[in-house]
Length: 114
Length: 116
Image (cartoon, rainbow over all chains, first blue to last red; front, side, top):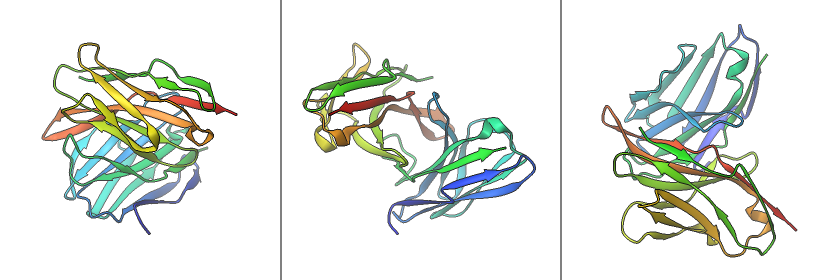
């Protein structure tokens, strides 16, 4: 595997379910990100991790819980979601979390909440 | 706080014609500017970025962009498009967000449709 991978690619869940999204980067980067992409809205940054420490949390509801066990893996744990949480969730990584660093994106997980 | 405006949500263009996708930003501090492309069912991929130096930046797939500080713009251009350029294009600005980190702020995107 190369680049940034995400699993699953598609997920359908009910509002009472608990599920997790997984992201893995094979680039040796130090920073990882979760974004939410909804139709007709700009990408929304949810979480930033640098060297496994969370450095940014953009007022995301507590029903989204990130976990970064090491610099290659990032998880997004989901519980009691709402239908408006349906979106494409993108993971990205970069060498560091500096202003000039290019972010490399995974293909995303398409989440549907029923 | 910074913001990015992409003036056109959709741009249809005939194959081999030139195209310009517009992007304006607002920020009170120095910024770094990026264009990303998203092909169907894929994540975003960097086309080009402006960090400093020459205001004309060349990227992959024949795209280029010009940074204009006085007009706070970073328009993307290609002199002759191909069918394979059909995708959604995102302009983004990177600026300091506090707490020791930088954040990418994206525009809403422009869907480019190349017509055979």
